[in-house]
Each structure stands twice: as structure tokens, then as C-alpha cells.
Length: 430
Image (tube, rainbow, N blue to C red; front, side, top):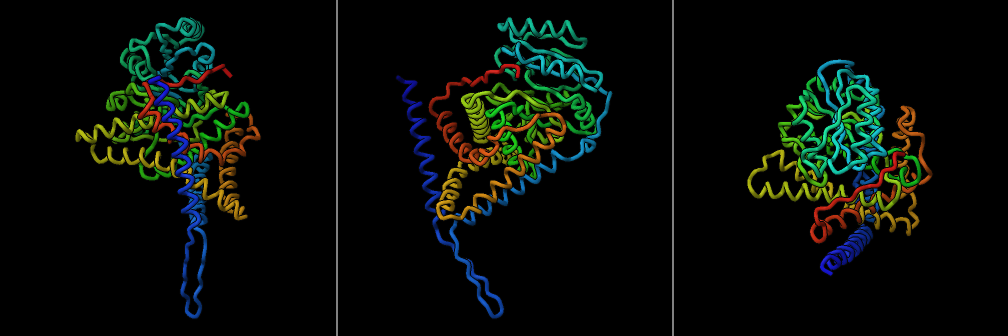
């Protein structure tokens, strides 16, 4: 009964919060605004609903961030000068219950154009099927070895253990289901040889069906939203499609054992002032969730993890251990959560304009959003990263209110019912 009550409060609070934000958006959207322009002999007055100005600002935001993302994805790969050989690199692939999917990462890494490269599969001691498959891959390919995680229980522990056990001058981290482009490590090491501490490529879900296409499009929407904060010197770096020097890894004490160790790592790198190079024209792919429940569970895990990282950083602030970059880091996380909540109020303003037959207010941001997704997908298909998209790409505008509901539920869940567990997506090797 004790576990059911917090969840009931979480569900009720999410519904009430969503309804409240929608109502606020509707009330504010119905406000009448007036703009007066005095010319020499004529005075022009414009009368319009507040909803119209909000949607105009949102359209500008979607246009700007979408254009920045498209520009980056379409930038020539020659912008990142590759090197075919240089300092040794150790690619770390943490695995757990991944015996059906880990061939994707290991075999694509074997085909890498960079040399010298060692591949370390880090398996969990209680996962017999994955350990067996890892040893088969190690026997089949030179340069592949298997480690049994000495910090069993998390991806962060697996990566930290591997770095500590191996004499790795440079470290690359990938997920088990990740397909890594042959040229990726050459490009990453080119950036590191040019002075970067960390190199971050782009990783997208493979859109093999309706749900998978939704996951792919949602990542594009999120990648576009990142572009605005990147203008202010904050670059995301993760625990996949990521290459770094050992010195950089040690400066931030590796990955912390939290729900979203990659987000925490990105903020740690920013607070430490590391040079992180983002190159979204360097694209790898991963297996997408195959059901809506898996997609929702995965995204909720990421959002709860963001709240966990924010909570920990706020605690550090109260203890007086946060410097200027730490304050910016907190602001970045708060703005992300707040922005997602605002999308619910935006949704009601859009609905108000549709009821008033102002269809263009909806069509303009919708068209820009689809154009962004289409141009990015065109590049990915041309590069052989994807085969195409399902018709459900037209559902992309629903992502914004979904972000708001997800954020509300995650905030309440973190405070009321989260027990430290995390959601695991079912992977099939597709």
C-alpha cells in the first residue's frame, strides 16, 4: 500500500499539473495585445491575441535551432580532419544482457579505419550468455579482449573499471547496440590531435518501423534544442559515440554511478572547462525502442536522471563547492526542465488559434519542424545511416506537449516514488 500511494499521488499530480499549465496557457493566450506605430502622418494600431505572439516566438525558435542543426549535420566531414593512425585508442563497450545486440558495436569497430585500436568488452560477472558471446567475438577477432567488471552493477562502473585496468592513452566509449561508422575514430582522433579533450559524435536510433521512426524524430527535435545552449559554450558529451584523452577522463574522475551517467559527465566536463568538440556530421546509429512503453520508459529514465544530476549539483551549491561554471551548469538544467513545462502552455495556445481558424499559426512551426527532420533524414539516408522514415513522422508536433507531461511526471516521480531503479529497454538486435 505504501508504494501505491506515492504513485497515485504522482499520477494525480501529473494530471493536475498538466491541466493547470494548459489552462494557464489558454487564459494568457486569450489576452488581447495592442501595438501602436506612430508614423509622420499616420498611426497604425495592431490588435492581436497573446497566443499569436507566443507562437511567432516559438516558430522563430524552431526555425533558428533547426537551421543550426541542419547546417551542422550537412557540414562536410572534411571539417573534422581525420587521421588514419596515431596514438593508441582503446574502445570500451560495456555490456549487460546484450548477447543479441553486441555484435553491432564490436564488428563495426573491427572495421574501423583507425589504427592502433584495441577493443575491450566489459561484461558483468552474473551474465553468462553475454560473457559467452563476448568470448566468442574475442576469439574471432584480433585486438578484442573481454574484461569482467570489477565494479559490477552499472555502466559507469564498467567504464571506470576498464580505464583503470587498461593502459589506455585515449578512450572511446560505445553502447553494445551501437553501429560505429568506419571513419568515426579517425575523425575523433583528428579532433583530439588538434587539441580537443573530448570528441562527441551524433548517435541516432535506427528508424526501422513506426515507433522507431518516432524515436528517431524525437532525437532530432532534442538535438535541435541543444543548439541554442551550444551557442553559449555548453557542449553535450555522453557515454556513447564519445572519445577522450585519458587525462580528460581523470580530470573529471570518470563517470559517476548515477541514473544518467552521461549527462552528469557532460556537466562535469563543462564545469572543469574541458575542450569538447561536437561533430554531428559524424553519425553512428543505435537500436531504437520497439514499443511505445519502452520509448516512454527510456525517456522517463533520462529525464529522472537529469533531475537527479540537478539535485546533486544543487546540494554541492549549498555546500559552497560550485564555481561560476557550476552556476551555468545549474542554469542549463533548470532551463531545460522549465522549457519542457512551458510547452504544455504553448500547446493550449496553439489549440486556441486553431479553434479561431488561424491555421497558419499551427502550420508555420509544423512545416519548419518537418523540414528540419526531412533535411536531417535526407543526409542520414544519403550517408547510409538509415533506409527511410515511416509516415508517423507527421506526429512530430506532439513531441512538445509530451515533453511537458514527461517532465511533470519525472519531477513528481523523483520526489515521491523513485527508488533508485532504472528502466531497461528490450533490445532484439534489429
